[in-house]
Amino acid sequence: MLRKYSNSRTLGDNVRLGVLTAFSAGMINIASLLLFFSFSSNVTGHYAILAAELVKGNLYQAAVVLGWIFLFFFGGFVSNMFVIHMNKKNTYVAHAIPLVLEIICLVAVGTYGQFFYKETLAETEVMLALMLFAMGLQNGLTASISNFAVKTTHLTGVTTDLGILFSMFTRKEYRKNVELKGKAILLLSIASAYLAGAIVSGITYMHMGFRLFYVVSLFLVVVLFYDFYKLKLFRFLTNRRKKNAAKQVQINNHPAFPKMQLKKEAEKEAVVY
Amino acid sequence: MKLWITYSTVFVIGIVAVLLLFNASANPEKMILGKWKETDWKFEKGIAFAADIAAASKTKTTQPEFSFHKAEDWEFLPGGLLRLNIAGKEEHLTWRLKGRGHVLQIEYGNNRTENYQLTVLDNNRMVLNAESDMQARGIAQLIFERTKTDSYAQKIQ
Image 1 (cartoon, rainbow over the protein chains, first blue to last red):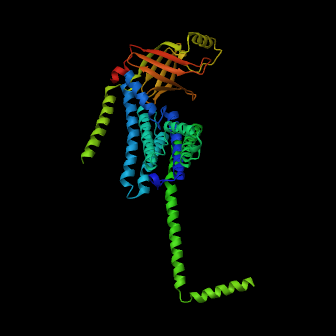
Image 2: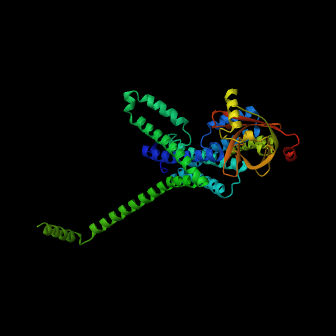
């Protein structure tokens, strides 16, 4: 999910990344709405609120919303900074750092909320700010490494693209286009995962409260370690193959090898007869 | 190097702008402190509905979702304590602001919570909007005026 970059990514890579991160974003957005009465994974509404608060002359609220929008932007900025500056040194690490930062933010919100939250306005605003930064990090990362194919924290673009795609599918030549079909599968997966995450969050919020953020972090840990595990497995398999090949070469070069081979063949024939 | 200076400058300007906005405005958590007198409440769906609801709540044929129409004076105290004056009797609840300071949450001792949209809050006037699930599904609007004797906000400022 995280190892590959831009055009080298397959549809499967993008679907896996999209589903897991969209599910997390859906959970976070509903959790923030239920706990703090404000969305945290999309900023379109915040732009509208900013304008409305400015018009009403509510400068405090305008400042809060402006700060949140800035942090979402800053999350995307930080994410892509890691991707473009560290990609050549170690792709996996470059892509993993934004996710690690996101997990830190979410665990911080969960821990603070569970043990220290006194429900003051300042605490609420800071926790929402952390969540918006985390969502900016996630959206920046997924968009950046997938060549802008995967955006998982909001569904405006996804819904628009799906509308366009389904209108294209009214023509036969587009219906047969593998790339377009793949894109539709990816977008539908993201939308479904986001919705599923939101529903799960809404149901479990009453019982879990702030512990919900640990569950979301767990999903992101899966994203993080999926590639780590695959890399390890790949290295293990490659090493074993190399060792086996080296053993085979040793056996072939052994002076007794032809005799051993003949003996084995004779034994096989004896078993047959 | 020049690029970093440009980026840093833009970020610093952005942060300073947000801080200036904070400084130029009053924190709603402080603004709300003090005594408020309920002057009016209405339903946005029209007078006929409002009259029905008022009649229903007077005869107690329905259990009202919100307690707003019961209280005459509200006193917001620091530390999240709310003192309601209902027909000469005092009731103590807890209050807190949520979101960007646009939601007033009032909690009763029995785990019952009421949420109001804080649509207007200035030195003299406060307007709360509440979505009601009563017979008329409309927005109930509650209008307050600050009691002049109060001086919490002035003391803090």
